[in-house]
Image (cartoon, rainbow, N blue to C red):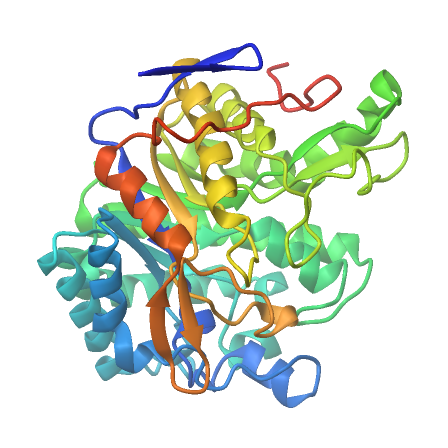
Length: 421
């Protein structure tokens, strides 16, 4: 099956064995994580409280059943470090056992499991030491990994050490919206990058020591597509290169020799002026959070990662805030069509995980954004699959885009910045 639209020719079908999954994270869905630095941030009045979130700590089996009902093949979750190690060196065996039960249940339902060992939040005691700026942080993280991996390994297919080091460093040390709340502290952000890179290397080495050198270990990183805004053209190139370095290569180049696969995460593009961004460029559709919707960018992000790092790729997050579910179906079709084009051009892309299975706690934005293929009633924590979830189920079941629905493969203006150099 082939589709030709606006001069671009792509296959509708995805490769045999392509993984279709969904992603979540512990703090955003579990509830009750009161030993985390983010909970302390809430108590300080910085953000709305997460409370019980989606109550997934008590409803994980229901969540797995929803993944199965959607006909998907994989589920990505994360561990809450603070729940497992609320004090340095004191591990809650019951919490580790609960995660093991979850993962075992997911495997028993036929799902491939991906486990992320760190997804933004830290134990309060680590943040009090300076979080990832502390030279102790990578050492503590390695000890945590060595504790949990032997117990969870029988139930895990894919290991990811870290989620989005760039997002964490940006919001913690540049915007100040997240703990520790520093603003425009670029040296601090770079030190956080370096601490996380060392934590990844130590964790990966520990996993390979425990499970065998052949065990693939990766991490996930958000890549935005920087390109010229409007008429600026080549004048935007220095700005584009700066944003690529700051958000992508400053971290990933440091760990490039220590990843067996890379999780690419894409949400929006970044139109560049000679200095700064022009987020109004082209007046594209917007999500409920005001984020630009630019499907073409997912192609450039994947091709950049493929050409620069040369490792197997997974698209581990892609989604939008859309409370009315008015745009999510089109968003899925258009982004997946551009992913298919990346596959046609040789990208070693092995799966797609939508963000997110559930509506959840969206950090500094609280509960207003609705990212879920499954709607959550926060009063009752009842779940209901949205129409876009049914569409995604149809795509996954067929391993192809529906023939009767035409994706939009329009090009954005300007020369792509995420290109081999």
